[in-house]
Image 1 (cartoon, rainbow, N blue to C red):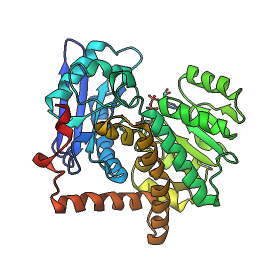
Image 2: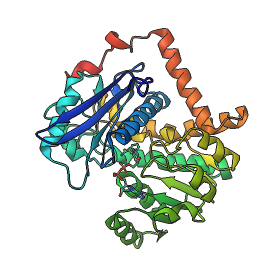
Image 3: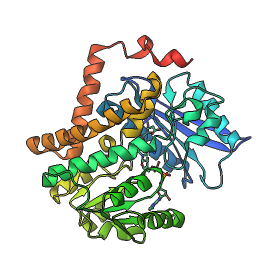
Image 4: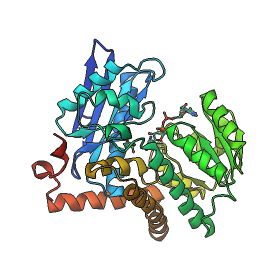
Length: 366
Ligand SMILES: NC(=O)C1=CN([C@@H]2O[C@H](COP(=O)(O)OP(=O)(O)OC[C@H]3O[C@@H](n4cnc5c(N)ncnc54)[C@H](O)[C@@H]3O)[C@@H](O)[C@H]2O)C=CC1
Ligand SMILES: O=C(O)CCC(=O)C(=O)O
């Protein structure tokens, strides 16, 4: 186990017999501040699969926090269970108690399979919850700025490829129409684009088809894995990770991959393969940082204008990474990783007041 978690500071297995809660919290790195990351709920096939997911996701959060320049470190949590049948208020309260036991080392909120309303129950047990609905004093659904950030990422990518920012002339393939993907697809259709969509949830597909009838663009539903082979300009993954792999890369006909899904590359080498195939990759943790920016901003009290300004910076960050990857002949993922690792290293060397017991402001909630 220690070999598996050797890159991480702490991993907590949470088991509550009364509510059936089985969860894992992973804290990757707290150099920049307490760990922050959403909570994913999935019917994982095994504990190993859940552990693997939470380790990868929490590592990604360390890079995402560094890339977005927020004063948090990387963490994430997963609940093993089916989000359509296994949720209960008691389950989320039990989860809240485990989060609270970490005493401010870990803040959490929504991710795939969870919603802000779930965390209203957890909030009764801990103050270390972010992305709480507006009426509870939080900043609300973090998928709104995440989707906005993806749109900025798409604009930057179109700028890098064609020297324009116009979303409308392009076609897109969107995988997953959940909290983020639906909003992204809707904005693309509203801009007049043609959008291929897929989801395992038929209701989500019906909703976007109905919505598109009122908008200038068009939507075309495709079945499951067919999404990888459609003739779109940009692939926009908004569901699971690992979808850029040996098998799918050969099928992709797009010129770029830019979406919200965490850990899109199965392995880092797939970023290099995309580069070799001439497909521009928008590193996921740069593109999907909008939600993180919003929940980190809650420290200062909710302010949507401030969040929007910081989310807009995703456009410039992505262009800078594209430029650096070209100049240094690195994949865009390598360029982004170097940028974030330098930032963490610099903070470590300064032994700044953000680290450990000199942390200033996160404790205001306790
Ligand atoms: N919610 C947020 O603010 C953020 C989300 N992300 C990432 O974006 C992705 C989507 O997150 P959410 O929209 O919050 O999740 P969600 O749970 O609201 O939506 C996920 C959607 O993907 C669909 N889906 C699942 N498996 C699929 C498959 N094999 N093929 C097609 N569709 C499939 C689901 O039916 C659902 O509609 C996740 O990878 C998440 O980690 C990243 C940053 C922030
Ligand atoms: O969106 C959130 O609530 C926290 C950020 C996060 O987990 C993510 O960006 O993956």
